[in-house]
Length: 477
Image 1: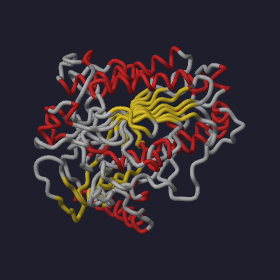
Image 2 (image 1 turned 120 degrees about the vertical axis):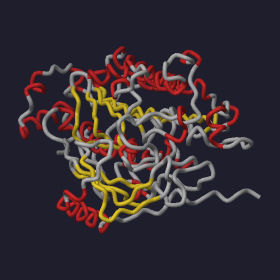
Image 3 (image 1 turned 120 degrees about the horizontal axis):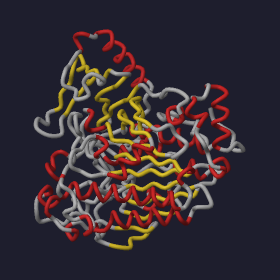
Image 4 (image 1 turned 180 degrees about the vertical axis):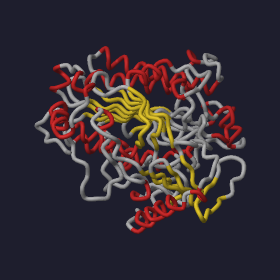
């Protein structure tokens, strides 16, 4: 249901209540007058390469994350929340557009992500979440890692954001040659990575001083919140960490029992605490929906410099669960029903959900992969998502439907790197076996048949976008 703009957010909920018999919890919850009068603010905090098992509230025994733990206890902890790709660029494109990256061309069989010599980026005809929200009066700000194109026409300020402060691609890029890549990422200082820090379209620092970058992102995010108290805003805070090379501010050096990686996660937790405290101090908490999650799973090839997927199998780059199922926390005090959510959701769904609660329109002139999760947020109904498509590059590797997941192709990120085709597909019941250890395909031919039919239907209707990652800027003479 798309509410007319003249309705406030709470009026929309009232309409939903008439149609759906609102739960007793939602009927009893109190809302401030300001929450009734204003469109909700939307904040997305996006980590980079954080694993499913890297937070205390998701099971890590030694990394201390009190702010995220409190956020989870006051809000919703989603345990079946997915990204649309197991690596940076395509995952971020899906979050911004609500579309599988193969539709926009933001994935490639030749290059996994965008690089400093890439000529492409997010196509101008894609509608970003920022652009959708600007149509209904939102201020928009992007802070942190972008990675959807570094040329002017692809930057955040060309894609619906009023302002940008951050790095245009991963923090391991623009590496100075001299030592092997993995060694440099583990031991090199900031001078080894000539990545630029940008303000809007201008480079203001090079190389970016990454030892303080999490702190400065946080200060910028809090400034955006304070300066937009009197109008609805969308803040996209995309941390560079814990992508390698790992850096943390001096105040967090040696703080965590987990070592350097733990220091980095604990500084991100501090950052989340600062953002939430700023929302509380400005009186905006009950008018702001906050999502915390990550772009893909942990980079396991970096050993202790990489994170943990917990009980999930594999990590970044893989279509096993550890590569694409992420820790996710949604927070909106007094507005959403707290608890643990075991239904399926995805970063793909952020666009439709945000548009629903903001009174904006979801693009209707193209195929969308985004569904509205607000029934789960407000306790009025189940998640409309029961299916996930697992793409690696431009190939469909697996499908989850309900509890069952079928793998047509697999490729691990560590150990045996060979790519395997599976006929019949591997089949796992993710409710019984989230670690994907026990293939049950022989016992469930009916399930396999249903998923194969779904695959045929999906692929028959797929219109692939032109590859945006492969083209390179010609070298200067």
